[in-house]
Length: 338
Image (cartoon, rainbow, N blue to C red; front, side, top):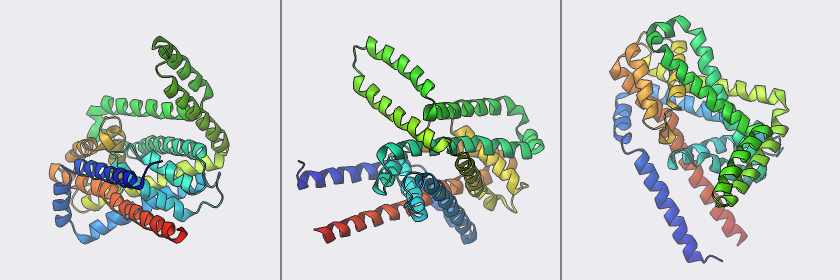
């Protein structure tokens, strides 16, 4: 048994690690974002925050619809709380802890670990599929505009779409294909055999996780209306995130809301294939590069900072309030049961 003193030490170590990760994450962004917020009108900031809230509300609805397939008592309030809860850990762990946070939260509210793991992986796969679908739809709706501004880079854009589709296909297969899992384990068993069973424990854990995914996919993917509704809600939520830059460009650049969403969705999709922790740096680079020819480098840079604030910083702050509130309630409950 771990003593209370050791538990306290471990908690403080965990807190320090989280704080260190947050400081590292915002080391280059905090100053420019704060300066940009000072120069931005309250109405634009309020609009960005409102769009972020709507995005997370829809994300929470998606989580709830999926969770209800396992736990009928799971509420929409829980789903929305989970969305902000995961946003906090997405920043605090540079993207790696969001899935673990979701699994932990779902587990605390009646969804078994095996079910929550499969649920989260499928939800993430639906999310990635929807990004590609949304970008292709908006590109097609603004075909002439996109070709006029980015026609000379069409081969690069095609490569970006191809990489995204490969990643998406891998996620789909990994989430639901038993045959794909068998191929993976044939390769892993061969490698593990050459290494004299050094990775036995890891391979066994992966087998168990794949089994969970197969069970979740059979349960959820068989419900066609649920899958279609989930992808539809994903497309709607992206409208609120990808339209954010238009609040900055409106009246200052010759671009419509639909065109703004097309370019933003393209920048997000292309940035996703550049390896960077939580997309930090890659998103700003691609965003500014694409919009600089449309709105000018200065305005594009300002929009990228405000976009990062709306999609990264503000959800993190709200998520922090959620995390603190959860800890306070847990302590009060612990005292009440003592």
